[in-house]
Image (cartoon, rainbow, N blue to C red):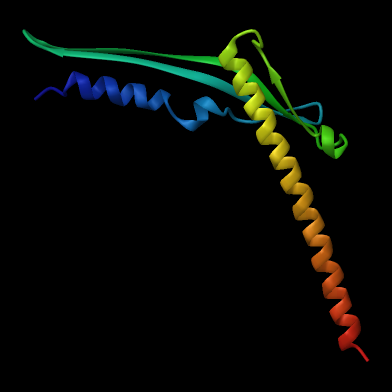
Length: 131
């Protein structure tokens, strides 16, 4: 019994549509970490009239890099470098990425401040408990 071509085609396309193809593996270079961001497009069609057939295609296009430089000042550690800023979708993704990164920076700063406050409170409690 042969395998259903529709199922086989869909399974092949779904292998392309995974997180590793959208957010690429980090690349270490010159003390910086580069994280590639891509756009994945899929198309699929199937027919079952006189015979059975299915077809599909996928495209993966690099659109940006997230650059993490831990040696830079806190506000400059994370940047988004778009590869095709003229295309509206890429521009929107770049702007959303920058907003997300700004949120991440603010969250990290708050976490650091909260940790510093907890440390101060812990030291204060130790001072009170120690006669």
